[in-house]
Length: 115
Image (cartoon, rainbow, N blue to C red):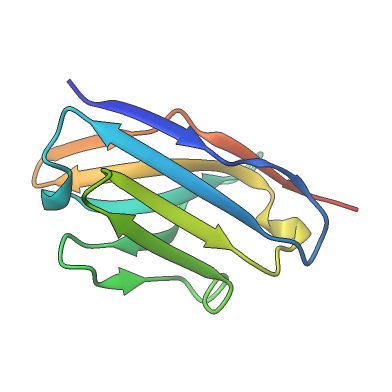
């Protein structure tokens, strides 16, 4: 049974930074592709960063150059460093893990960017 704990959300001013963390247990973490998604009110959930089990990363243009995803297989964690935050980055952020047909989600953490 997978246990997932997300942390690091909060309120930040435009231009500020936040670092999200996701810790997963009960799985062979190193074998999972990991990602961060976000969902703003009234919008569909969207991928903001992904990292494969072999450390290949991918970002949509909306966050490229501002967000960085990283994983630490020794600690079973994946992080999302978010810099130069904009009001449009406001959303609930979710950690996701996938391996074949298996998938899990974190509980979500709120990120709010406002002055």
